[in-house]
Structure formats: C-alpha cells, structure tokens
Length: 254
Image (tube, rainbow, N blue to C red; front, side, top):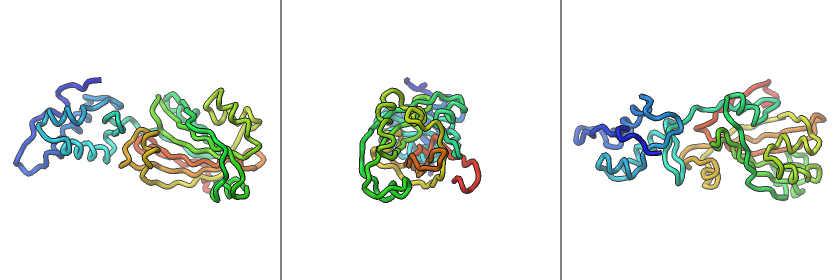
C-alpha cells in the first residue's frame, strides 16, 4: 500500500543545528501520533524518503532505526518499515495455552510447523526431561502467529518413544496442545519458566520478521503431565516489540 504523500514531508531546516535524520524521525513520529497511519501500516521506503527530503539513504536509515529503537515502528528484513502494532500480553502461568491467550485479546491465532526431527538430547534438554544426555528426543520447531503476524518461535523437545505419535498428529494440525491430546495427554501444566533477553540470530529475525537490532525475549519452559512426568522442554523466542510477558501464579511456578 502506498503511503500518503504528506507523511513526513515537512521541509527540513538545514544549517540550524538539528541533524537531518532527527528532523525526519520527528516528522514521521508526528505523522504517526496524529493517526495518519494505523498500526501495521507500511511506511514509505528509504528510497522514497531520500528523494522526498533530498538526503542520502544512510540519513533516512538512521531516522528509521531511531524510531525502531523506541518501539514506534518495526523494520522487517526485505519487506520495509511498518507502524508498530499494539503489544500483546502473553500470560505465563500453570496452564499457558497459546491459542487461548491470543483469542482472549481478540486476535486470531495460527501455528506453522517449521521443522520436525529426532535428535540427541543435549545436557540442558536431558536434565529438564530427566533423561541421559544423548538419548533421542523429538524436536519440533513451531512459529506462533497472531493475526498472521509472527509473535513466538518455539523449539519443543518431547520424550521418545512416548511421543513418537506427535509427528502424525502435527500433520493434521499445528496445535501442540491438540497433538498432545491425540497422544493421550489431555492436560499438562507449566512447571517452570526462565526468562532472559538477547539479540536474535539471523534465522530467528527472519522467522519473526523483525530487525536483528531488536531483542527477543527467551523463555526456557518445562511442562509436565498430571502425574508430574516431564513431557516437553521448550525454548521460545518472543518478538519483544509485539509481546510483553505477564507472569501469573505463585513463585514456585515461575
């Protein structure tokens, strides 16, 4: 969609002590604040803004990076820059269910399975699942979306051979909860969650459609069945510009 010609189009004041990139950033911020673009709307390209203001693309890029760092816009590799959407509350508690959380905020959830493979459990996975290191586990990499926007990239590790049937179940639906139910686990609980933050890898940034300069929130989570047996150890990477983690429950569940 082409942006209105007036967004960020005020003349630049040259030679008056205010950097050109800062003036461009201020003009775009004023246009966004005034509601000229709704959340999620694509902004003019670097080339369009460069031509409009008579500056080089490096100047424009610095302006866009400043707005991105403040959370006003999001920059997607290969797609352009967009006005930032409202941030989702992702509630972490004893029964964390992706689809339920997204629907509760009037968004449409979806899942996309990226990879499924058997692999040996490394030390962290083995300890969480109470296995010997090197024992095979089923790895499932899944992208969770809200209104077709990626919000979380999760790498799940399931105990084998107990959950070998997940492969067939996930061919029918990308729902982890549904696949576990098909394998006889109708309910499960979050045992622990450990949260950190870091910059994404190139692969993570591409999957989450965000800049590598923006951090991701990383959650290491362990789920168990009603008998207390560990079933799933997950490493989740959340797009920090679209999600904020809300902790629920008592301290021994976090």
